[in-house]
Image (cartoon, rainbow, N blue to C red; front, side, top):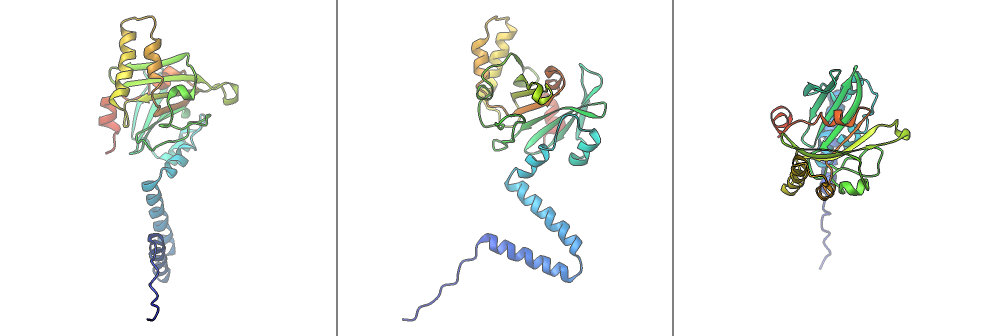
Amino acid sequence: MDNVEKPAKVSFWSKLQSVALTVVAVMLSLGQWNDTKDAVSSAYESFVANWTNDIEYKHLSTLHVGQTQAYITSIFGNPHVSKKSKSDSEIVYFYYGNKKYQLTLAIKDKRLSGYAVVGLNSDFQVSVPYTTQTLLSTPLEQHFSQTDRYFSDANNIEYYAESHDLGKKAMFYNLILGAVNYGNFSASDRSSVKQLNADLDRGIEDVSTALATSRKLTPNYFAVTELAPKVMVEGLLTHFEYKTLLKID
């Protein structure tokens, strides 16, 4: 019996590459290379953004306190929403909505004084600046063993956040980490925040137990700022503001 060679299976990626090369060849023959290059680049970015978070991580990594407003808008475009700070009339918060994350910028005198990121999906594990950690990966208590300053609310929005001074190596900026009730926030997370706030509202002197429970939350929010931490935390949108002004389905 004669040996019959079976046709080799062509992988999905090989087929995709073949199709792409065919399209490029056709467009080249029509003298439309510039249009083809832009289309291929756009298609590639859309593919990467759909299957990974690499493009978003790269964009966010370009943010640094002290940058000009003009430079930031050249990268992220114009903000979707803005509002003035109630505690500092010179500060305006700019908000950018995205299916994967929410970005807040604190602008003062057309200069970036702080920025905050909330990861909305469980796999959006963007690096936390000035640390070796990422969002949505490990509990707060594993980022820092203790905290002296914390902020929490359970009224218009449920959140727990704590501030840490980064010292002279990082210009004495403040790093704020927390868990905010946007996106990936469980009923258990909400319960922990509400218990801490209930204890605070009742004037209980020792809230160490409730505080320890809140510090077991996994942060989905970070902020880096030269402002007073309470001013940066003030930039968190309420449930109503988030759902009506910024949420992208």
